[in-house]
Image 1: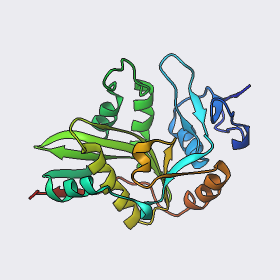
Image 2: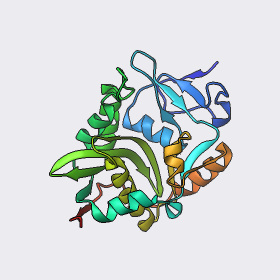
Image 3: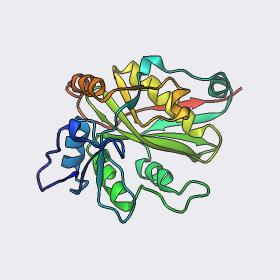
Image 4: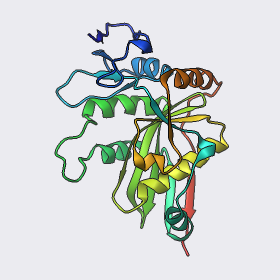
Length: 233
């Protein structure tokens, strides 16, 4: 049986996570900033569907991307150079998370409920949650959001309304993280999409050890200033 969380912000040891479903560790609690931060400090994240209790996860293995290992596929590299676009950070966080919450094509539901939006919105106000936005023709066409603690970044979700829009925002974000000393990006679970960018799987113990080094780095939470214009060719 999984643990049910009480009013404290304590989580069970990661080793208590289930094998099937992979990584399910605990249930219940809330999405207050204090509990979310306590979870992320240990590499635990919430994921659940509307109508379910809050479920907390620590999968094994874990999909991660080291910023210095970013691989940009050739076709996307051409788009980065030649297509007119703009990328900003932390400019319209609410619009980005709302874009991520829109059901995907062929789907009727989204896991990003109002409760999720409120919880991460509170983290954004505190300077821990961040958004990367892609604009074309002065219109928000894609982006992603995640959480930063110390030198660790946790990717959460992305969306695109035009081809490659979220990928453009992602590449700029990874390059920014690399330049500012971030050591690892959590991608949670394996996808071929992320593998093409250089992400790979590591076991939970290795992830936890690396995480412990990165989250204690002395970096104050703050909104990020970034505004890149590519005029195109």
